[in-house]
Amino acid sequence: MLLHGDVGRLESVSALQVADDLMVFRDGYLYRVNTDALDNFVSALKFVTVTTSPFTVTDEDMIFANPDTLGADITINLPTTASRASGGYTRPVTVKHVGATSDHDVILDASGSEEIDGAATNVISIQEDSIDVASDGIGWNII
Image (tube, rainbow, N blue to C red; front, side, top):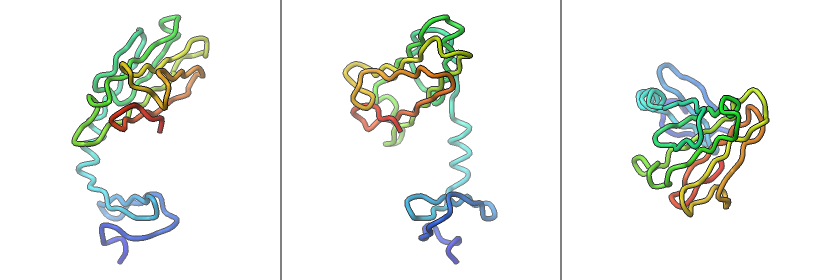
């Protein structure tokens, strides 16, 4: 049976649970996910609400930035791409503008000469907008 193996070909499923296994459909293939590893990953995610500027990302995965509390723009300094690597993979960073208004911006700033999709900074100017970035080892890419 297709769901019994690790990988099989399907065309119209994005995710489903079979008994204790989580099956994920991606790029035309069905993968069985080790749910113990997934639980460990999810429990290891780090969230922070930022109300000061500048804020330098260290090991946070999701950043909720509220420039209204500060009454000014908030700059989020991204770490070097090498410092985000874990086990050969680069962990993404999500930044969300959680201000009550769009009066002030949240500015992502790449480290040193690194860039975010070819630019030194990326601005989130709309309330409730967010951006996900991940590193290719050279710079940050919007995903």
